[in-house]
Image (cartoon, rainbow, N blue to C red; front, side, top):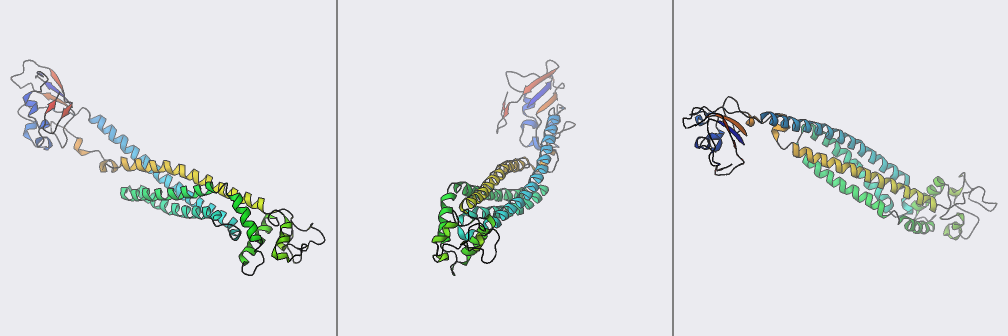
Length: 354
């Protein structure tokens, strides 16, 4: 805080007594508009030198808050679309491999289920996030922030699951396909039979490693000349009889094709999850910054702080930082001119350190 005092000197680093007793250094009187001590007996003329800088700062912060508000709305809308996209990808993966669930462990499709759940949750939360950013509700945005952290945790779980099982898919799939091969055709394993038929028909394959795998299964009853009709290139009744040759069937196994299918889906889930998580971290930072900027309700409302205004020698709620003090009427003044007093600190007892 700097004072320019006309007609008075600073002696031995101590402010004039008239200044010390002024409203600027008196806790009660400095907060009164009508305090006579602010204007008499020396008719001080007070001027705020940093008012312009303060106004520019408020305008800059206000402008930043408006920009962040727009960006939050845009980000929320993008995340709404991203949630719909995640939901669609999860459903696509689930439909693509869901028919084969009976042939493998459920953990292969758990990742897609998590992605579906996360996509739906993101879409709903992002919708409310748009409303919160428009209304500038810090309470709503705070709740939204917490929910997004929860969603971020689910995303990490889903992508981590895909990454962890990336190398384990090979061994697990081999074991599952061999076990379910022997269950094909059983009355109590109709789901396995249907899943194998769908797999062999869609992927144009037969058996685990080849059509000969069927020879050792209960399905053939020891007849090595038959395979399931789903192994045929054109599925029709009786096409599974290969006694005349294998020209009508697919002779390649289903293991490699299914492995590529599962790995590809897990890679999609992992890559998409990482991309969304990275964007989401930046978005959460922007949300936190917005909440910090809007802590001051006056800035949030786009108004200057009225407590900072001073005019015509009157003080309002807060003391000035720079003042011109006309003390020419002081008979003790030995010479004219303006003296400068820099207040570097005012403690709780109104003691001034120059």
